[in-house]
Length: 361
Image (cartoon, rainbow, N blue to C red; front, side):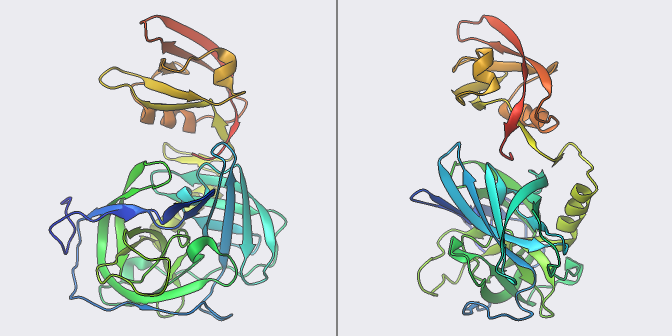
């Protein structure tokens, strides 16, 4: 697929609805570079609605709040109820890095502590569970296979991270099978997402993980990213605003795998293991270069120094930060692993350590 947008000759910045404000991150949609439309319609107008009143247009929506103690930040996003017992579907980037999670059911207004059931980093899907929840009203889903360019859609979510009654915006499906590179403005990372529904409904930061509804009020997509340039004040939107949603079929397929407890190369089940290093590329040399050590972590206890490059983990070679992340994803708190690192002087050292619990990756 082309790296250029379907309707413009230059790249467009797309965000994971994740905006940084003083001590508060609002996961919504991220900053994106687009490309690869299957269908391109003539220009259509988007409209913005007032906050939703209790009705069928607000099906099983959960406002999500998280704290990230390692970064000293808080965040807010949206989720969709899957079961009466409180399983909630959301984006992985909404709960990524969270040390505590709370979810408020917008139907009964109750707030619950939440735990991570599992997540898929590459698919940007996560499932969390609301502790002690029962008798909740799940959302209704429909296949996204029937979606067509020009269809009217409604996006519901926690725009601005303000909580309370969800906001509602409407628009049209403007393209299908879109590919975007979405940027997380909180840390500069990016990820490639494919097969997305594109809409001109003006979704905003905080809407990530919320439902994209068809005219029957059923969920056909999970709001995930939006073009940069949206405004958090007022309702005036740029005519070229684009929002992106993961099709419901794919999101539910991943969610069901998580519910079954089936881990894979991309899906992590349960608690997340932590080594306690922040790494970056080691340039042309192999390994994951240690940029920072988390105080009190297994890495600090083992004596891993800043500036060293981790070259093996659990007997497997580490050639990049992404490889180390993938190897960590297969582990759980309490696992004992042996790591090896190379110092700046070229010396080698190794240690056996026990992984501790950390935030979702």
